[in-house]
Image (tube, rainbow, N blue to C red; front, side):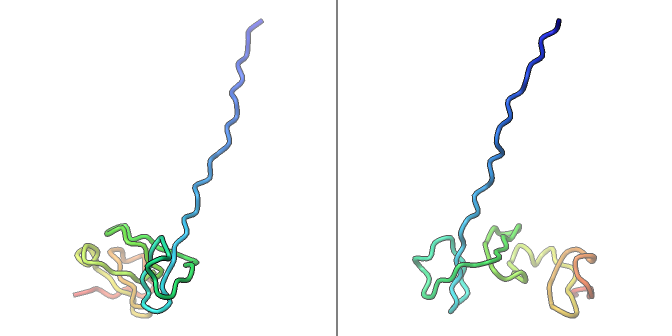
Length: 93
């Protein structure tokens, strides 16, 4: 008779949700609340894949991003390098 080996099940480790704070006065976003004049916990935070900055504004535009942007949305003003990422694309000249 052949022996069967059983694999032990390991628990999946959930990534810890990092707390991010935003200043309700100036809009600065940080991971610590000590250097903000009016700190509030940010509900939804976006991390820019171009510069790595954390921001609460989904319309964040930085210098490395501007070089690649080709389209803007006529309704909301969002900029993107992809035509399909906005609802009403307009070519940036």
